[in-house]
Structure formats: C-alpha cells, structure tokens
Amino acid sequence: MLEKTPTTRVQAFLDRFGKALETGKTDEAASMFAEEGFWRDLVAFTWNIRTMEGRGEVRDMLNAQLKSVKPIGWKVAEGEEAAEADGVTEAWITFETQVARGYGHIRLKDGLIWTLLTTMAEQKGHEEKAGFTRPLGAKHGHGKDRKTWKEERDDEVAELGVSRQPYCLIIGGGQGGIALGARLGQLGVPTIIVEKNERAGDSWRKRYKSLCLHDPVWYDHLPYIDFPKNWPVFAPKDKIGDWLEMYTKVMELNYWPSTTAKKASYDEKAGEWTVVVERAGKEITLKPKQLVLATGMSGKPNLPKFRGQDVFKGEQQHSSAHPGPERYRGKKVVVVGSNNSAHDICAALWEGGADVTMVQRSSTHIVRSATLMDIGLGALYSEQAVANGVTTRKADLIFASLPYRILHEFQIPLYEQMRERDKDFYDALEKAGFMHDWGDDGSGLFMKYLRRGSGYYIDVGACDLVIDGSIKLKSGVGVKELKEHSVVLSDGTELPADLIVYATGYGSMNGWAADLISQEVADKVGKVWGLGSATTKDPGPWEGEQRNMWKPTQAENLWFHGGNLHQSRHYSQYLALQLKARMEGIPTPVYGLQQVHHKA
Ligand SMILES: Cc1cc2nc3c(=O)[nH]c(=O)nc-3n(C[C@H](O)[C@H](O)[C@H](O)COP(=O)(O)OP(=O)(O)OC[C@H]3O[C@@H](n4cnc5c(N)ncnc54)[C@H](O)[C@@H]3O)c2cc1C
Image 1 (cartoon, rainbow, N blue to C red):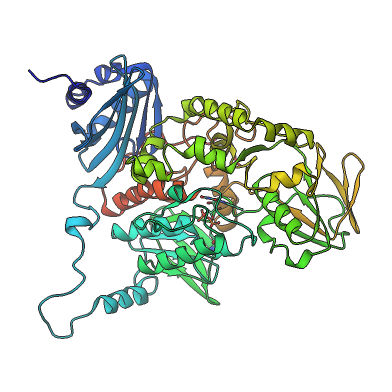
Image 2: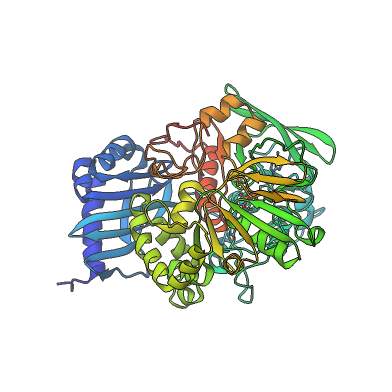
C-alpha cells in the first residue's frame, strides 16, 4: 500500500474532485469546498477573472460552464510536493480543459477546499514557441531570394497597419501596453501599440526627476526578460525607461511612438473598431477587432478646481507635469496632497533649495520602505525568496491564490507588526501633526492600492523631513482659494506661493474611454479599478475582483490593462490568452460578466 504523504492525499482528493467534474456532478464537486471556500479562476473556467465564494457560487459556475470546459487530468504538478502546516495542506496543481492546459493551487482544510486557484496557462495547439519549440532563427539549407529574419521583420513593420490590419490595437505604450504587446507577439496575434510619446519608456522618463520605483526589483520583472542580478533594488525612473525601450526593440513589438489615438468607434455588426491615430503628424485609420486601453491608471490627472486659479500669478502644475526642483531654488512652493507623489516631490524640492509646504486634507497611510520589504513582501519578492525557490511565477501565483475577500485578513497582522517595529517613527510623525492611518480596517498599503489606488506613501526619507519641519506641514485643512501670490487654506492661513503642485492623484480609467470613444461607452463600462469593498473611495457592492481590469467589459471587445509592474506582468498573460482565443475562434463563453454599479 502507498504511504500516505500530503502529496498522495491531495492527489486522492483531486481524483475524486476530477471525477465529480467529469461526470457532471456539480453538487458533489461544490460540496468538496468548505462552506466558506473560494474558487478563484483566471480565465480557465469562466473566460473571465472571477472568484466564486462559497458552495452556491461554485455550483452555479459549474452548472453554467462545465459542459463547455470539460476539465480532466487533475494532478499535483510534476516535480512538486504538497506541503502541510497549521492544518492546511497546499499543493501546486495541473489540469486540462477542452481547449487549454491549466495550472493552479489548492489549499485543503479539514478535508475540504478552502481555496482553489485555476489559471489558463496555454491553449492547446496555440502554445508559445519556447523551450523545445523555440524558433530556429537561422534558415539552414538554401533557396533563391530567401528572406532573412530582419527582412521578414521589416516586411511586418511595413505592412502592419498599412496594407494589413492588426487584430489588436493597444492604445498606450507604457509598461502595460508593452508587456501585453510582448505576450500577444509570442502568441502570434498581430498587434500594434500606439504611444503618443516619442520613445518607449518616456512615461517614466517624464515623471519628476527624483522618482525611483517604490517596489523592489523582484516584484518588477517584465514577462520573458528578467532584470539582471545587478539591477538596483529600486530602479531609478530613467533606467526603467531605457529598459522598456530596449525591451520593445528586442521583443520586436510593433510599437508606434509619436502616435496619438484621436478617436475610436465600434461597429457591432462588423465586430470591428475604427480608430483614428495621428502618426508623426499624419492621420491613419486602423481597423482592429480588439481595442485595449493601456493608457495608464496613473495617467489621467485629477485636477481640483479652486476659486482664484485664474488670478494666481505663479505656476500651477499637476504632479504628473512637475519637472523636478531645478527651476524652483529659493521659491515658495505649496504642494496640495500628501500621498506618494506629494512626498517625493516635496523632498526633492527641499533638497533643491525650495521652501516647501505640504497641505494635507485627509489622512495618509505611511509605511517605511525597508519595513515593507521585510515584512510585507519578503516572503514572496526578495533575494531570500529567490534563494528559497520562490520564482517570480510562483510568487505571482501564490499572491493570486489568496481571494480578495479574505486578503485583508492576511495583511492586517503584517501591518500590526510594522506598527510595532516602527512605533517611534509613527509617534514622531503624529507629533509633527501628520494625519496617519492604516486603511479603514488596518489592512495597510496593498489593500489600499487594490481598493482605491491611492492614499499612501512608501517612506524613502521624506517623512523625516516632515518630522523635523524641513518640509512644512499644514494638516487637516483644504484649499479655500488662490490669490495672486498665495494659497488661502480652509482655516484662513495664507501661504505665499510661486508654484502650486497638485499631487491630487488620477481619475478612473474609463475617463480614457470617454475621451476616445464616447461618454456613453465610458458609462456603459463603468468605474475601473477597486473591489467594491465599501471602504473609502471603493464603494460597494462587493465585486470580488478588480473592476474591469484584464477581463471582458460591458463594451464588446474593449479591454483595460495596466497596474503596477507585477500586475502588468501577471495579468497580461490572461488578457493575452483571452484575445488569442477570440482571434482563433475558440468559443469563449464568459461567466459572470461584471455588472456596472458606478460610472466613475
Ligand atoms: C509617481 C508614480 C510612482 C509609481 N511608482 C511605481 C512603482 O514603484 N512600481 C510600480 O509597479 N508602479 C508604480 N507606479 C504605478 C504604475 O506602475 C505606473 O503608473 C506605470 O507607469 C503604469 O504603467 P501603464 O503602462 O499602465 O501606464 P503609463 O505608464 O501611464 O502609460 C500609459 C501610456 O499611454 C499613453 N497614452 C495616453 N493616451 C494616449 C493616446 N490617446 N494615444 C497614444 N498614447 C496615449 C501615455 O503617453 C503613456 O505613455 C507609479 C506611478 C506614479 C504616478
């Protein structure tokens, strides 16, 4: 008899689960989940990004999808062993559907599924040409007028968008558009990326001078090409810009710089978009089937309106347009806002010899970078994690395996540890008058990011300047009005100013759809981002997944892509597979298309 190891136990469970699915016994399969179990599916079962919560939702999904998905072959992944700790058994798993191979992760508690993650890894017959099937490159043998790799590539560049239409058009060539373009390229989906800047990477280069990535290198890799081992932990913005430019070239993306998308409309009958772009001053009409807005979640500036903005004689800029401190030595600057950009900009201005005041209207979550790296990210994204065998792919999937409904429960204890470790720091910050919070439920930075994409600063030094008064602080007040040479605050304080920087964040990405397509389509799609957590700036009802990101929207063949480097890398895979399937005519019955509850 086989020795009962965690791996054999998980395999026996998977055999039962697989049998229930193969024989269409959806009640039985659902009953193998804990009452409060979760099934998070990235495309494999739902052709959507969707979390089923509890047995009822699992059963409903299976009743709708099982006949077309036809899953088989549930196995503990080759080369992996299940692990047991604290009453939870977990394992990496593989399975197949009618059209795809899947990879996933399972956690069993008391013999029932607590969490199940299923992801589509590749489509059968449409695998990426990699490893054993990588392209040869060279053409051995001989033939008259044979074309070289470069000539073939030149032909593609000359034809696509001119005599041959792309299947997919990505508007926005920042890291999001670039990562997705690379994935689509490897899947053979003819794609053009249009970018209004002159060079790939400019969206980073054009940001304020002092900016370095706030996330560490292990979290930031792009698909296919990792950063080298000597890459700095926090890459300076221009270095990321150059990396993106290099990447775009070596991954042979059809990247049109200096090209602005002007307008887009969708012909439902033809199932085709008409997109007018201006490329180096010339209008071109493109006719893709799929349109992806990768125009940046931090791209559409929120500019507040104040009385007197027209009478103010100094300069006013949104943080995204702030050039850096050089021009402002000896000047008086008021920075409106107290999140990441506000802190970075205030610190750089102070270093550059300006007299800076930060205006903080509401509280901000602060976490110190080193503490965040150790406690928040270390287990998954760090040199130690790499040494422990946690590859980027595994780290991404472990992260993805934690359902959003309970993610905050995993986060809260981490932030309690951080609070403890940096107690003196927080005390000093409060003493300086800074309003600080830990998120509505104490779950800290990452939940704030997922829920509202704002409301925090990862401290890389600016807080010390607030604490010692080098950066002046006015907190608990807003801006009342501007005068010719000053900013008047709601408590009546008048701050002399030569420059006002509005570090007031960014609007919902469906604003891009309003600009490019129509307000009607933007409203149809609804708010982009957020989980529906009913916390500040993330109104309910509960969605369970990020609104409208990387998945079908209420507007046919219109997609949104973006997020931080980790999300861009990870979710571009699933968006690319959804687009590829549509191109190949593979049926893609979407389960649980997101309903719209908020317009913006
Ligand atoms: C100050 C700051 C610091 C950040 N730090 C980090 C960090 O440390 N780590 C991290 O992972 N993320 C960070 N982010 C968040 C996020 O990763 C970045 O905003 C990132 O640039 C997003 O990439 P993206 O491709 O989605 O959007 P963007 O980089 O904004 O790219 C969108 C592109 O779309 C183009 N575009 C817009 N409209 C059109 C049009 N009509 N036609 C053609 N092109 C158009 C723009 O020119 C732009 O290049 C930060 C963001 C900000 C603002």
